[in-house]
Image (tube, rainbow, N blue to C red; front, side):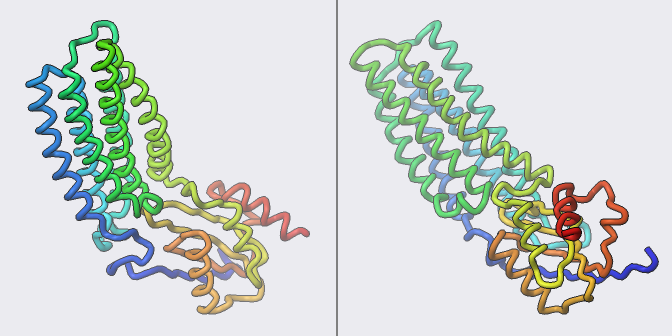
Length: 325
């Protein structure tokens, strides 16, 4: 538009090298977890056939879905490391979001499969070889809990790692439930205890999975990450020296561990220089975990004259109040 002046500031880390904000490499954890759980699945299937235990066979199916989930999460994490290209200028970090979404869906499918089996067994309880079930399921607790601990260090920083952690903790919980059910059946002879315990475990898994899945859906729709408050970021930018108004503020996840932001800053006194942009970049990373930042400097408040539909509603309202005060 004639009569208006724009200056763009673009600051980000070198995406061709390792990211300081990315969690450490969990490739070895994925490989070890998949290997251990695959071996355990084979053991479960063999002993379920030998003992006639449907509980162990159902748990083996559940573990198989989690091994597939780990493989999907691992693939997403590896793809996210790929550098940008002429076709994918942001790299393939978004694949980690798709992996997290698929991971959550796999957990829900596993919940449905266990619940279906448990409901069927309540009406027609099958004979359970309780001693075999207790021993094999106890081994499962050790393997699954140990695998979960491999991802403990990164589950707060990356939703994909958190998904793997939840997968394994859910498996450990299922195995613990199977052990408890086996012990109760051993002393009481009531075979309906096994499916009842399974339903309780399904409820726990569903509760933990729902948060993971909802966050993955939010990320896939480029929603503001749950740990970032849009109003706080807007106010922070508005309080910067020389900034009269802030509009067109957008924040979205580029991957499960990396966020991006664009914003228009109205600065009537002119462009503040490169140091200003560098300081804003450091502040956004340190205070809000936003790593890739694009800022447009405007000398006049175009937003006040002609606000487009893609403006952040609350941010632009606050900017106008600040400008008029």
